[in-house]
Amino acid sequence: MLVFSSATMQLLFLSLPASPQVLFLITPVLFSSFFLLLVLLLLLSIHQWQHPKDKRLPPGSLGWPYIGETLKLYTENPNSFFANRQQRYGDIFKTHILGCPCVMISNPEAARTVLVTQAQLFKPTYPPSKEKLIGPEALFFHQGAYHSRLKKLVQAAFLPSAIRGSVSEIEQIVLKFLPTWENTTINTLQEMKRFAFDVAMISAFGHKQDLEMTEIKQRYQCLEKGYNSMPFDLPGTSFHKAMKARKLLNGTLRRLIQDRRDNKKQGGGLLGSLLGAKNQKVDQLSDSQIADNVIGVIFAAHDTTASVLTWVVKYLHDNGDLLEAVTREQEGIQRKIIEANRKLTWDDTRHMPLTTRVIQETLRTASILSFTFREAVQDVEFDGYYIPKGWKVLPLFRTIHHCADFFPQPEKFDPSRFQVPPRPNTFMPFGSGVHSCPGSEPAKLEMLVLLHHLTTRYRWQVVGDEDGIQYGPFPVPKRGLPVNVTPRKIKRA
Ligand code: HEM
Image (cartoon, rainbow, N blue to C red; front, side, top):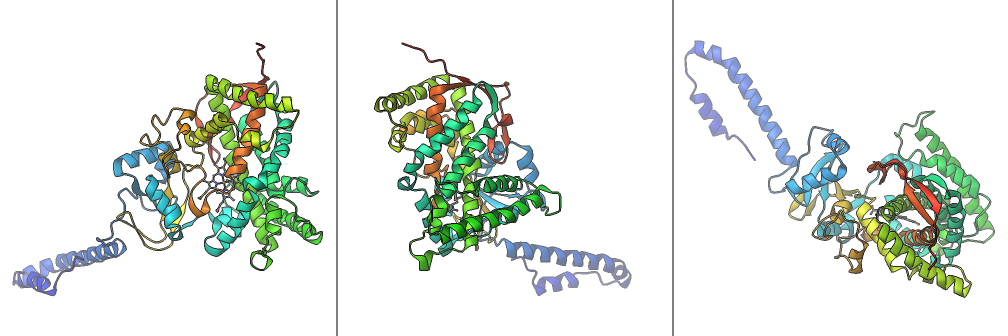
């Protein structure tokens, strides 16, 4: 620390000229310089206290006070924002966005440390408005015992053994939607949202849908309008309407939960899993814990899957040979189904290697969750750097997925790269560690069932030649990808 010794101060005074006139002239100057020096020393000590020399913050710029680099992030393309800084500062760098100092991480091993091996030091963090709308007891917002207890129950609801029976229900939804697209121009994103929402309702409530479903659907649709609105809880605002819908939704869910409890019919889906927790003493959850987690799963399941499906439609449209190859794979399965006079099954979906690789490559290329947010719960020594308590830590999935060292020619859409499994920790579309996505299997299943029917029966043409990305909140093709859907002309041999 920079400290002036009293000897130095004495020397300063002793070396002053002795004449009283001169003293009279220089005294005010001397005092103000001395005062300035003291202020400087104080500021320097505060700075050194906050950022001790032996504790090295990651390189990078915190930008302007408070606004930091937020404007740059929003005016530049987010990809170039991350890539430019990675080039300048390396895989771990600091910045300041949305009022928070952040450390961004694009090194797979360091991302693993944050998400897996040292996960207890980095808690998930969301804007308070999201927590209010979804419900504070949803598992996203928790760590430790409550989170792991819930996570087990949620995972159990989405294990392959639990969801293999839902193929025919998902297929029914697909067959309800596809004919409505025929010979019209659809907004792919909006249609995929409607489709993914109906499937999410099965994930949440099981096959046997209760009377309350229409009410839940309407109220949820009002609630979701608040997710990306400004969090002003004033009459007339979207946020206020969403909060009102959330309260009403709570009432409907409580009625449904009570009804299932009273009639001792736990039912299927996540609700069934949460109501039927085996070890009642340890696992029994309150109605509000159940409601928050059911809403949480609908939230997590539907915009994500819809955005990925929109990209799959785009990539297959732009890669005609690939679309034909996927169609051939699906026609092979279709032939078996017709020969055996049966419906599409779970086992069929396990024999779609090319279609599965198309989904994997879409998850990599589109990387709809570009990053996730964590917060250091204490001061952390990390990879030779110091991360102060309260700083946000962001593993950058997209930057890792687009790194040429792990995925050569990263901008090329090439599903064949997944014939060889990616290097560990370089492919994390569903996150990693304790908070990783429990819905990866249902998400893949619904995409496979939809693609089976879409590719064998239809062709689509993108309307307009506008390439580009919009954020809502996930990156999706511009204007939600309007496409013209027509029945496929089958060539007879
Ligand atoms: C392709 C679609 C999907 C993608 C790309 C995706 C991605 C992710 C990612 C990256 C996370 C981890 C976030 C973090 O670590 O902060 C996550 C968490 C989660 N996802 Fe998904 N997800 C998808 C679909 C689904 C579906 C269909 C469900 C449910 C049926 C679901 C339920 C959840 C839940 C409950 C969490 C929170 C887990 C926790 O905090 O422990 N997701 N998802």
